[in-house]
Amino acid sequence: MATDSAEGSTDRSAATRSFADAVAEAERIIRDAPHVKTDQDLAEGLDYLAGSIKASLHMVGAYQHDYPFFASSTGPYTKLGLDNPDTLYFHAYIRDDAEYVVTGRRGTTADLSFQIMNGDYSPTQSPDSLTAFDDRELDIAADGTFQLRFGPPKKDAGPGYVAFTPGAAMLIVREVFSDWGNEQPGEIRIHRADTLGTSPLTVPSDRMARRFEIAGKMLVSRIRTFLAFPEWHYLQLPVNTMTEPRPTPGGLATQFSSVGHYDLDDDEVMVITAPAAEKEVAPYQGFQLGSMWYVSLDYINHQTSLTADQARVDEDGRIRYIVSERDPGLANWIERTGHRRGYLQFRWQRITRDLEPEDGPTVEVVPFDELPNVLPFYESQCIGKQEWAEKIAGRQTAVAKRMLG
Image (cartoon, rainbow, N blue to C red; front, side):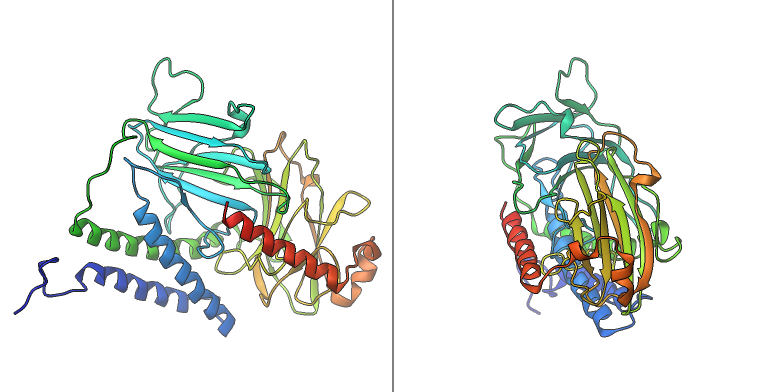
């Protein structure tokens, strides 16, 4: 019987069999999800699966403690965890007994933050946030450049050194845009202090095969985890309500959030009213919808999210978001794009004080035809089709530019 000389096996699919089995299991989980009621639900689930397959293979390849690099954690085509449409996410895997150097250049975005986690998400628990801070703690030079060092606790480490807590396993960086069209992203890099200038060993075939196995486990865990996650933080809340602003569980030290979930008929409209945050209190304020797959809706080709800079603020200093399936002809329309049910999320970042209930949203569900009577500044919110098309074109252009940054 002939054998495969490279694999030493008669089965040429042995390396990928476990990953193929994991893909099939993940598809079963998607198809059996309790919220799958329509073909759109299933189609979006399969698209979510495709992005998760891509992300799992990408992440297992990025699992480099000795020669780390920042990998894109999530994006328009690899969504997870109610990804923020305004954020570029990056992560690098680390060891708590090694020293790493992060260098970069600060862009003009609303926020740049760093977070160290002790692991990854699982279907039963979230990882602990060990350290979290934003760029206000960096020593940024006049040309925008900066350097940070991360490593085990040591004496006389000097400024710009962040000591690891035992168990540190992942460094996450978030760069957040508020004014999509005008803010410029920065640059960021990472290397291990004692391996720069050297080269990693060649990866043998058995370790490559092991990567497929690990990627399959990551894929199934990813799907299970973020179907379970909303049960912890969203679905136990009364429908069509939002919480008061509160520190984001397991999140950034300078982030508050307000969450909820909605269920609306096509002739119903949710009016969400929130003060436009003062820049000195919260330079970033964003609102978005999410699907029942716990990912953002299409924010490139539809206005399914708004930052305070993108929204039209009423004369009383408040933003009134109109969550609706039908087009109300209003500037702050948040498009449901066929999603009768979904998630609601506010984020405030880089805050300078704790937010109070009056800083957060109020929610009212009204008939679509009642909008002119409900909105106190209805006429000033009206928008024509050409202006709306320009708004969408601006989103498309800004995201395309951001993805090349």
